[in-house]
Image 1 (cartoon, rainbow, N blue to C red):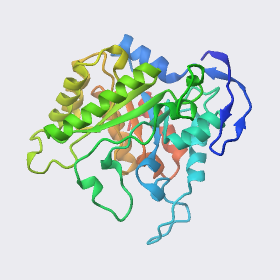
Image 2: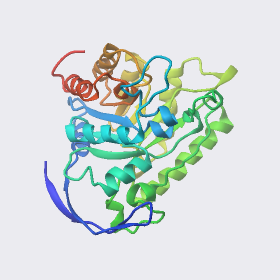
Image 3: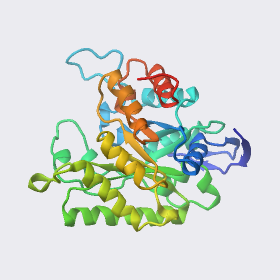
Image 4: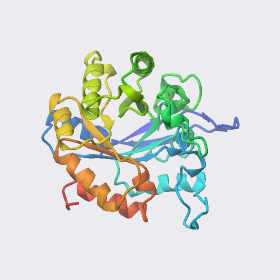
Length: 332
């Protein structure tokens, strides 16, 4: 890894307190190195691993996962402070390449604490929160209604913590975000979704903000659901990105794992398109390990696990084994 020293700017905290200018050391990120190697040689065995700690953008109080004091029939969860401490622990462990956070956690950990300075781990934010991830307890309606585009976080707030960054300030915070789309095989709704993605993509390119693209399966397609969901998602991705030139393209994809055939078809279609999988809901340890192993076998080069890590009995040990499987050191 290589280091460089960067002059920091004063940072204004959420209460108006001005942090003094700082000097900090940056380390070359493993994400950038692996992306370059994969694009140069798609047959290489490099694998990108991400911990998705952005659940506060979806689940509310339950986002940090169950507290160790949780007992049956008790809604006792970790606190946000404990959730952020786990982000610190995972980052210091150094086995993942990306930690995905909410913009508010990014402000605390990336901008104020400088957690990722001197680390090869890349901080990233959830750049949008479509309505199908509005998962507040007791509602039940939002996830069952067709997804609509919405974006709470702004690119500038991710990069420098305020509404309008100077060019120099854009190096202070996160310069990577997850943008999510859910297509429902409905021309009006999907047109709205893709228009919102275009607006984001153009703004991101203008501001030097990178992104990776998450594409979910249809969440509420009623009587017009695709007969082949995996093919529908694959074709939608290819069609959407065919009109996007290099500067605006996502670094990689995050999609549900639909099995070997669908993964092999998408990963083999375009050597410049890096395909990754999302972990989905919590399952057994074997489920998580086998999914990563099999997806890599058929072409995936990225795995982003959220609930599977958060709900693990011991998160750091779980990540240690994910890393060993991803690097072909052990089998699932």
